[in-house]
Image 1 (cartoon, rainbow, N blue to C red):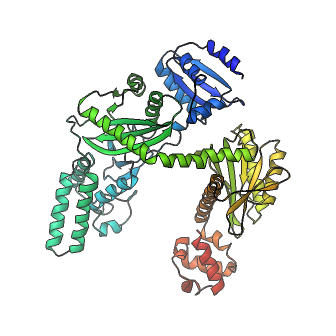
Image 2: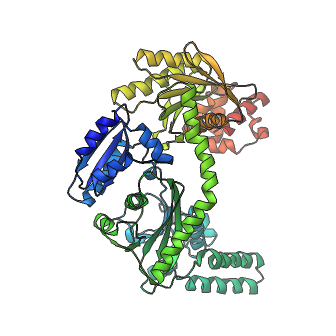
Image 3: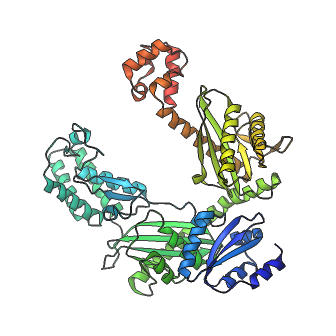
Length: 590
């Protein structure tokens, strides 16, 4: 759309709350935003100069649409729904953010302690403690509590006491009669600890340490001493002087050179339990970006606190209406000091990581743009890369990974179990390309701008034949490797020709990253498939093992895990040395 037509369209936009969608020349929505005054916000994109991500966005805008709503809350809800629906390329601020684990003390007659990610906020809210951005700290805490308190460890009750019982870390609930009051006392002690009161456990460890020392069990005493140090150094976090002990999250921010840094403090029972940070490129105004981020933050597996503290650039009334909890802008006192501390931490994170971010952008966005220019493509927003894997012609699988604007999009990765279980790379490529793009056509899925196959001329030609048979116009290229199995050229165009790649360039690292990503993804899937295969099916694929030897191995060992424990000497009791080596090699790859 010409500038004059955009100007005419802008003149008709009302200055009311609403959502807007920016489109490229193909009509694809590339950005979704909201505004209190639509006309003012939309006009800002088409006047003045812009930098960074905003400049790239504006360069691609060919048209826009908008939806008028009654209130700002409605515009926020609509904005988040549209972003979820269309996944626009420039709304990366809300994409692929982390979810953090919680510690759950299960609500069972004999409780268990476990680290969980997928949580039911309504069902088990009162039994969850966290979040723990450091998953290692969460696991260490659970392990520590399980050592101190002999809770149940098994998911189901076994028929006889397990190893934990003999180690003194379980009371044998499956076979012994345990006093219910003792279980409840343990439960109450653990809850106090998880809520921040470490005095009971610290006292218990000190008593046990002194006892073990008196009895000359110095190794055990040393273990308890290390446990005590872990609690005092790692878990005894900074005490916050807020007497009400309300659970609250504090959002700090800092802006520098087109990037927004966000720092979140999780305060639980008067202590900074953990913190979360993110650094993201900005498109919109900082206040809009942070408001949107906070709204999206609690759509993840987070249990909302009683209160949120935010800086003055955030629309706290809008967030209160949307989240249905207290959202406050502190102006003085301890809360203001904590908010300033969060903002200062955001500043430190951004200043420390800025150079790394710039280099990462050069190796992703700029390398992706360089690839687009080399291949003479109008756009290169989505790349789909394929790789195949098999072992002796068996357990054939393929993997597809997706890069969007230079960054892996793991939610779009796909696995393919190949129906033809023979060593036929061309047949495998033909099947996977057909299955993928027949599905794309059938379900009207997003089409890639480029297909990359990790193979030579033959596989490129097979992939192109399938794409042409489906009447699709998607370019297919390959990655050529040198004698050291490193990528050194692109195979592209029609007729196919080699495009050398400088091994010191960002493009080389970009292509190598794609290759590593698809290879590792496919190999991991291959291992999963093989590990799920029965021992009988695995033995069928080992050269030198016939029906007689297979029956001998099945009768003696029964399972894959038992066979994996054996050395070559043990295998040679049944098999010749060469066959034993073949079997050992296959078992190592599972």
